[in-house]
Length: 214
Image 1: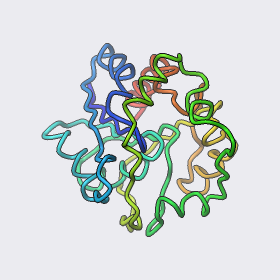
Image 2: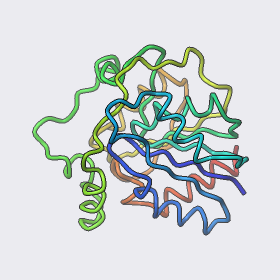
Image 3: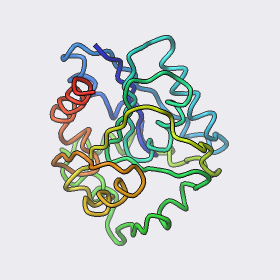
């Protein structure tokens, strides 16, 4: 049994992981999810990291899972706790002293213009789930603006899972970024950026498999 530490992305909440968490619990695992302080514009990397570490407490056998912008937080957490595995799900991969805003330019990413939020992030999510997730995220658009502080990545095995139908981080783009920044060949899953809502059972199964194959 593992403890899956589920970190949401920018503007998200812990509740966005509820369906995936249920699938992991059914497979015999413990789950920890928390709200990052995205509603506090003064919160920086230490406060975001503290929110996760405090939620973990004294749990062990940790698999730290980061969705989207949560990719900035997972390595900071793994630098402070003993983790067995770190998993990125459509996650951003930062580099030392890179800011959140600089990431987009440095990776050569062109964010889709002219499309509404639902079309980019929730195009394959059931409308009721999408509406509820957007409502929970209102007022939680903040993210740290300081340069990312980690000089060396923690010595923790990593896996990356990209979403083939992602309109925010297209698959071809992320295959390149994962290769260039992590020197990994990513795993792939069908679904858009909000795969934790559109394909929660399949995602839970893949995370369970990552744990078993670690």
